[in-house]
Image (cartoon, rainbow, N blue to C red; front, side):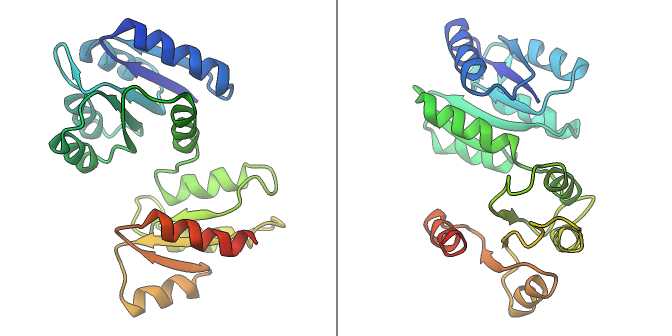
Length: 215
């Protein structure tokens, strides 16, 4: 798992790098870039799975960088670390499918929690199945499954997990999707999912639903 830190503030770069090296040992390599051009050079030459990025930087914004990443079809999770609470920035970040938008100063626990969550996020159903099958038994407590994904959709991924030979193949799988008609819910349950939640997601409802399975 490789991570790219992009920020024009060297002090912040070093602080974040030190925190991640100390608290997330699963990270193989942390790359650093101080501008968009440097970040693009890294992304063109090495495999990066997670990018932590500032918004305002020399030579273009972090939003410009993420737009380029999406245009290049790179499988990179993006977490913005920024001083800007402007809703227009956050809206653009959401449109570009950024994973998180965090405001500086960022607490160490929040930073580590967000990076670890990004490490467990699968960009399509095939990756989800591979991550589950490649994990130790009981490593995951539940799977929050989107339905419309490339390569393998959520229905197919659920069926693949249920048909496997793992003892924990009955792991709770919860559909999280904009498809909220009764036929969609029935299809989710028929393919082996345990429950269905319609987007936009209320995190409090997610927590309550997970508590039901973890009791």
